[in-house]
Image 1: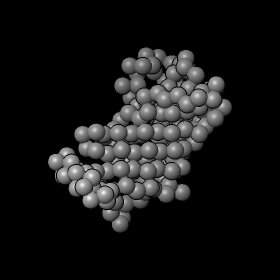
Image 2 (image 1 turned 90 degrees about the vertical axis):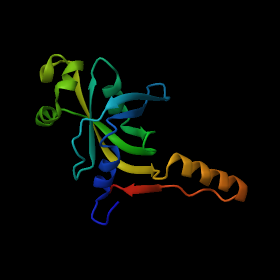
Image 3 (image 1 turned 60 degrees about the vertical axis):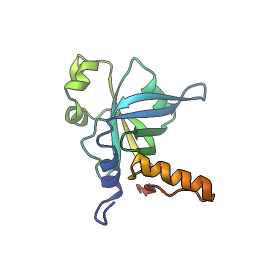
Image 4 (image 1 turned 120 degrees about the horizontal axis):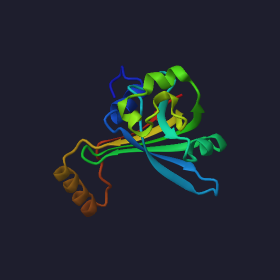
Length: 166
């Protein structure tokens, strides 16, 4: 993160190419459930929100209305970048926001477009984010792990930081 990057900009830099998040929420029976969802943002605004279209035919919107505490996980194994986000989810009825975010890929799931009776928008206010961003090659990582195994000193690889989204 450069000195000029805000936490939102750093977070967006990490997840912008990882379009899919595992969206974890609490089910009615108290257990955690996760769903793969497509992030609809083109950036993260100053409010620190992420957006997801979901179907009213599922219970996801009902679940976040009952308990808005959610977790989002993003991962890019090829780049060794991992992001964990906790936030508060709500169902948005903001028509202008839906219009701004709706795109042809969303239409594949909601053929009725913005008028589709199953279309629902969930917004997640980011409360906390943590990331692991490994810059070393796989060979260097293996060498560091082997050295750590011999020396008993855990390896240091890449960046691991928490972002204050306040």
